[in-house]
Image (cartoon, rainbow, N blue to C red; front, side):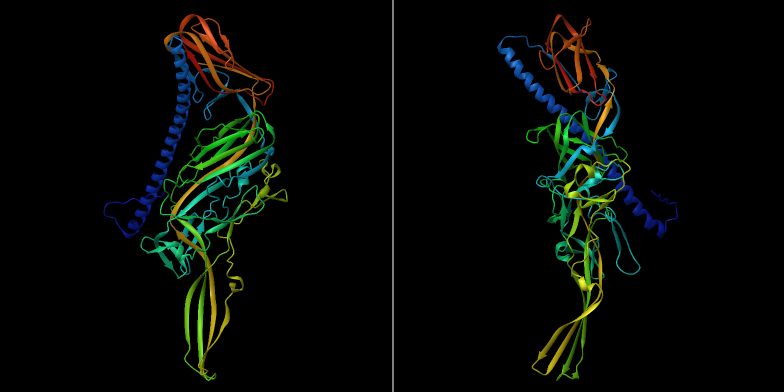
Length: 568
């Protein structure tokens, strides 16, 4: 940012004009930095809360067991150790994934599998908002003559095509938004046809000045052959209330076959200092029986951080995933709304007895015209010279390898034709008819469209949006074997019996082995899903855990999410 220096005694008009803009810019940047930091802290708190909830549930189960033991007069002194893999601890050659807190064989590479995506649908019932960036203003420039030039952020690409989230490119992204326009705000009227938010303007009702024109759009949803008409472009509210959900995108994905040993990854796109929340996620092998597997996770918000959120897929053919925006923000330049207007001229010529001219009159006014309903969302793509309708998104369209040229066709706000112009696109005159007064005076009225204009009104409001750079399925390749050995855990009291539980995935063709070392001696095998109780010869105050993995396939790995050891 350009910095303004004010030497003593050199205050002048140029400095006085530049300084407020700089201060405003710095305040806005500071606000965005604070919002990003707040979002990060919220992410940490939510992850911590999810882990705490899981532990609380486990403690409730332990309490039930303790109650049973108390009734049977068994000893009650118990200690437990909970192991997650979000942080670097222990040693060995296995991989600890910090984003999902999982342990797996060490990755050596990955193979794209988006070609296995068979279909993508938007669940309209559970989604809130519309695709794309349709109203945010990029810039407003005054002109010497005529109306100010207003440019929208989405003028060249509204990011409304869901295929942008599957095109194997981090240079493209998909947005989903919910907009709110402040219904009554101060507006300046420009040239009698344009309205612009201005603190020195007159308080006006936005819906009245726009005559309600252009506040709905037709949305093309993947999975549907026809667009859904009359979808609200924006809502009219002073500010988001506690019951106003931020933008939510509910999506369902199907695969051409059951996927084993793969990862579903999501790379976010940062919007307005707000992160993207993976609200819910379900997996199914048959499309009938569903299992919810995800707790709320915020994706990284740093602009340069492209590390994905990932979920391990094993025996999965269908996926439902809900994304939600992290909150609301006010675009600094405001919202743009397309308008069209005709400059009208009316001439009245009167005559006495039909041939004696009488004084004529001329009046002029501006008439706002209805605009054609714009279309947003996925329409079609060109792939290798072939057009594919995105209303039926299939693997051939979204399983694009990096480097394949894809041209996206979308109709966006600001490009819609003005329906009411029609033949009026050029100046035209037409006769309304003759008015006869008592048979003596006749008046001929001629109405002329002198010129028509199309532009963008500027209003203030709120936006909630989520962004997705990339959704991809990858099959990683792994080393053939490895092990992880925990640190030595010191217990707060000596124990003689141990029980071990684990949350894991063991695909076919892989092996997973758990062992316990209690107070020295030899490693003891333990079946975490069967007889998981170990009785020691002597009491111990220290425990160590070892996990060993192996696979006969380069693309399969066991995955361990958590381990718990109880001693008593």
